[in-house]
Structures are given as C-alpha cells and as structure tokens.
Amino acid sequence: MEQTYREYLQARYGVSDTGLLNEFISRQDGKLMFANVDLEALVAEHGAPLEIAYCPLITEQVQRMERVAEQARQETAYAGSFIYAYATKANFSEEVVRTALNAGAHYETSSVADVRIATDLWRRGTLTSERYVFCNGSKEDDYITAILKLRLAGNKHVVPVLDDLDEWDAYRQSPVTMGIGVRAREYAKCAGGDRFGLLPDEIDQVVATLSGTPHQLVLYHAMVGSQIEDQDAWLNKLIGAVEAYCELRRRVPTLHMFSFGGGMPTSAYDLGFEFDYDAFMRRLFATIAETCARYDVPVPDVVGEFGRYTVASHSMYLLEVGKVKRGRDGDAPWYLLNGSLMVSAPDTLIVDDQQFIILPLTGWDDAAQSVRLGGRRTCDSDDMYPRPGQEPLMLPETNGGQIIAVFGIGAYQSMISGKGGAHHCLNPEMKRVIIEQEGDRLVTRVIEQQSLPQIMTALGYGTETQPARVRRAPAPRVRRSENWRTIVRMVDQHRVIQEPSGVALTN
Ligand SMILES: Cc1ncc(COP(=O)(O)O)c(C=O)c1O
Image (cartoon, rainbow, N blue to C red; front, side):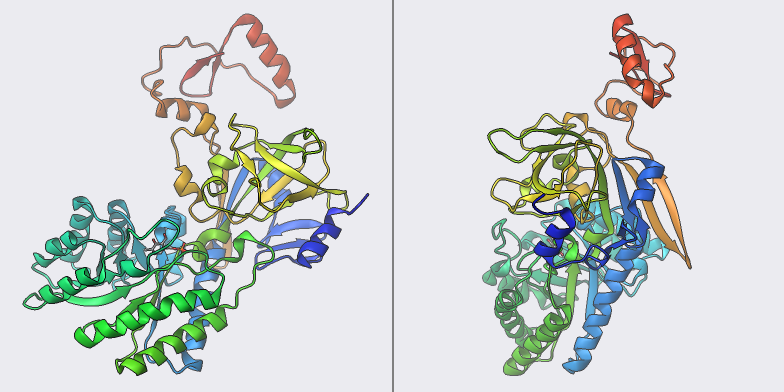
C-alpha cells in the first residue's frame, strides 16, 4: 500500500485524522463531524443521498465578521461604522435568510422577488426597520416598482443602487425622499465583464441632476470580485475605488457609505484555505482612513455584501459511491455517485477551477487513490469532478458503498440548480435535513426527496387532481431487498408503477 487515506490527508493538508480539519469539519472517535453533527449517524437514519443544512454556522459567520470588524475598527480608530449585509442571491431559502437576519445582517437584493421577500420580512419585523435594504443589479420596471413600493410603505432604509441612468429617472419621481447609491462600473471588471454599474460620466449626470430633488446620494458601490483570497490584490483594486469615492464625496456631502460589495472569501471550499480576516479588515479600514485623510473628507461607513462567506459552509451533501468503474489506459477509476454533482453543485461545471472539500466517511486506513467522480443519475459526460486540469481527487479504495461528504455547497449551488421542478436527466432533489437553533436547543426538520410525481407534474404529465393519461394500478409494495425481483416481475407483466399518491407511470 503506497499511502493510506489518513497519511495522504496529513501529507497534503497537514491535518491529523482526529480533531478539527477546518473551522467546521472535524473527526472525533473515527467519525466525520460536520459542526457537531455525526454524519455516519445521519446516513444510518436517513440514507444517502442527503443534503444537510446546519443553520447555526450562518449565525457564527455573521457574528464572527461583526466581531472582527469591530475589533479592527477599534484598533485603527476608524470613525465610521461597519454594515454587514447578507447577499441573499447566495441562498434565498427561508431558513437561511431568517437566520442571517436574526444574526444581525442587513439585506442586499438582486431581483424583484428578492425585494418582495425583504418587504414581507420587514412587515413581519424579522427585518427590523433600522436595517438597510441595498438593491443591486440591472432593474426592470417591476423591480423598480417593488423598491418604490417598499419606500412608500415607510421603509426609510431601502437604498436602490443605480445600475443604469433610467432607473434614476424613475426614483426621481418619488414623492418621498430616497437615499440612492451608485455602482461604479469602473471596478466591476470581474470574470463576467464590466456590465454592472455606471461609468464616471454617468455618475456625473446623476450628481448634476440631484439638486432640486429631495433625494440624496448616500452610497458608492465598488465590487471587484468574489472569493478573493489575495489581500494585496483586493486592496490594490479597492484603493482606486476609495479615491473615486473621496472625489465624489467632495462634491456630494450626503454621501456616507462605501460598499466593497461581495468578495469576502469562505473557508468552505478548500482544507488548505488561509485568510487572515482580522488583518484584512484592519488594512481595509486603515486604507480607507488614509485615503480619506489625503482627500480631506470624512471616512465613510463601510458596507460589505457577504454571500459566499455567509452561507457556503452551512450546507453539504452525502452521496454514496454506487458503482466503481475501472479507468481506461491507466486513468483514475470512476466513482459513480447516486446523484449528480453537475445538477446539485453546478459550480463544478461553470466556475473555472471551482473546488469543493470532499471527504470519505470511512476507509481512512485504506489505500488512497486518485479517482474521478461521475454522476450516476445523469448520462452527461460533463457530470464529473474534478474537471480536467484540476488537482486530482484522492479517496480511499472501495468497491462501492462508500459514503462521501461534499462540503461547502450552501452558496449559489441550489439557486443555480433551482429548487423544485425537473432537473437534468430528472435527477430528483435529495432529501434535506435542516438543523436550526431554537433558543438553547437544536431543532431538526426533514424534507423528503423530491418524488417522481412532483417531477412529472412539473413537466406537464398530469397533476394529482388531473392524472396524466396513463393506466392506474395498485401500488406494488416494494421492500428494498426485493427491488430487483419486483422490477423483473413488473417488466414481465408490463405492469404500471403507482407512486403512493399522484401520477402513475408505465414502465
Ligand atoms: C452586487 C453584489 N453584491 C454581493 C455579492 C455577493 O458576492 P460574494 O458571494 O462574493 O460574497 C454579489 C455576487 O454576485 C453581487 O453581485
């Protein structure tokens, strides 16, 4: 045996097989733990595939960053405040947004539906009145209308961030004073291009047309990227934006917030992750203070819109290696999963070099080997991880049956994949276990795996009240061990399979 899995992990990441592997993964008594959840016990109870959402990790993230920022503010004697907003586009699930707000986060929106959620939460008091609602993105009429409605309903902290000049034309009509923001397109040169925000001459036009209106320019937004782990590069990009803020502040005294947008990295994707949050926040405040002093303007309140950082770590998948296939010509073997990473972690496909932390629940004393994960529930050659050119994935040797944990999928994955409806190759959404803190106890909720009738209904094959045009027959009682014999019998008799309730499917 060349190297056991535990030896590999030790050599690659310098972590022991006992105790903490990172901030939220540990191994205790030979068991892999996600926060304080024993993953093997969960699989024993619920089976796999399984998605686990552990909401207290969201609270920890928000409160940790608030603490870090407060400490950094004090150490740099920064006179402005720090405003933590949750970028809900990372994960709109009700329990996620509620947890982030309960932890003290402000709200950042990206769509009309998002403003509707914010409005509803504000009416219910979950989003308290002193919290900001920053509205980003290119805005169609219904998005602008929803923002105006929220303002007219009495929310004084909704701040539309102009992405286009015609938006401004709409807010100018508001009979109630609006605090608005501008997003500087200059700094939005991320992988997706520079389509977000206003060019300098457009910002000038907004400033020129402010006077005579009751409205105020209050925020300058300059997002420069996502998951930025290089502090120097990040700060270098931000300095230009802070200088532009200062120049604008000289002309517009109502301006008092500088938003660096998203970008705060999460530890959720890589066991080797290192980022000194304390140092970054200190450097950020010091850089802004020094630049403002040079321009002789007061320092702004600093806004961060935290997407990945807030929620990436809070959820994970457990998948079973259902089949192992030999690699050809010396290639790594295929571990075929009873799910699809392409469907449930689409960033494996669309984000260059996206990594996830993937660990086995058992087999740490078995030989480690390089493997390729394939989705057994799609027939798509792109349903594989790691992608060609990425670092090989090492897992213990197995003939199948091994459970692997895929961490760090709480941000963007289920939003891009979609919730409900039909997915690629009709891969059903996994059973979900949602764990939330209620007072001093943890409360668990289970949402069953998406059923075939739900998928069929989404595709128009009929609804529960209006069955599709297929024959119905009594449901065969299938015990797991009898699966195969039952299938053979049904194929023989060309019977109809009936789900417990809903649509019948001929086989
Ligand atoms: C305007 C804005 N703010 C915040 C975010 C969140 O970014 P991140 O997930 O890097 O925190 C995004 C992400 O696209 C964004 O577009």
